[in-house]
Amino acid sequence: MTPVLLFGLAALFVLLTRRRTPGGRPVAGATEVAGAVEVAGFDPGAYGLVPSAELDPGRGGPPMRLLRRKELEALADSCLAGGWRAAEAHVAAAGEDWDERWSRLDFLTRVAAERDEWLTAWEEAGTDRCAAATVRARLVVQRAWEARGGGFAAQVAPERTAAFRAQLAVAHELARRAAESDGRDPGPWVVMVAAARGMRLPRRRFRELWGEVVARAPHHVGGHWQAMQYWCAKWHGSDALMLRFAVRAVHGAPAGSPLPGLYLQALTELELRHGPGGLPVGRRYRELLPRVAAALDGASTANDQVPLLRHLLAHFALLSRQPALALEQFRLIGPWCGAHPWSAAPNPVRAFDHARALAATLTGNGDRDGDRNGADGGRAASGA
Figure (tube, rainbow, N blue to C red):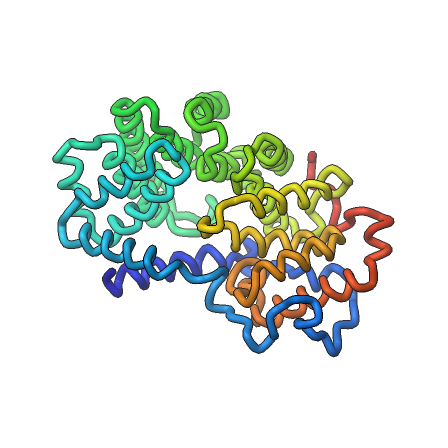
């Protein structure tokens, strides 16, 4: 794999994990809102945790297996050298595992972002029109966001907004053509769902697109994440609509799926928007976290999103006064602390280490107040 591509993928990971509030402030950690707890003399080994000296802020989870990394490097090199047959075979090998197929299309989109002559050749060959067109549509969506830049809508220059929407319309049309070439694949419809919020599609039209996704893959993880973004208050929904969508995903997810992790991402959206005080309260929300934990335990260990979700689970378990649940996540996470929310702190290692010390201390103390009072991490989400 070329150094440029490696740098690009690394930069993408950093951007995804170093999220901050709209005002630029780091998100408040669980240790800042759970109350002052004495953690002096904390011995990680006594709780089955790795030593503090071994904590690694450079990663959110264990490194990719060497064989897998070499396979992806060879695939990227083949594409960047002008070939496309290896890319087509890579996608075809996923069969009708639509989450896996989406993950492979995502990787190819990132490769195409470096150089896309091979993608053009693949499109011209016409051997798998759906896959090639889906990668192209995803690439156009990515470039549309690059054209827009960051910031809220009022902060984006009109010409950037116009370029953004024009490119999303192109991506939508490419995805529609991809869908026509293979009626089974939900991927093109997920691209249309992703473009919908920037295109300002009305809710009725969005629900029609979403219906096409779930008709093909009812529990598509990437599709659910994109749809949840549409229902966020910052786009075309509200805190209540977003939370309701995420909760339904938890209850409807099949065994072995990491889809319940969507609830953690919804909580993250609420916390980024309102702070810890904006998180939902009540037993039914508190009890969702152990359910999410069970889902992550049953998900494939090869899923690289699971370790990142465990960081969020540990954080929100602490906020909801479930320290034993948080402590178990810290044991499973191991030494990796380069993920949200710790990466938003000035010192991720210190934030992570203090949070797990807090979890261990509260678990050792029985967290009697939390067990008696239930979740009190913050006010109920507006309208939820």
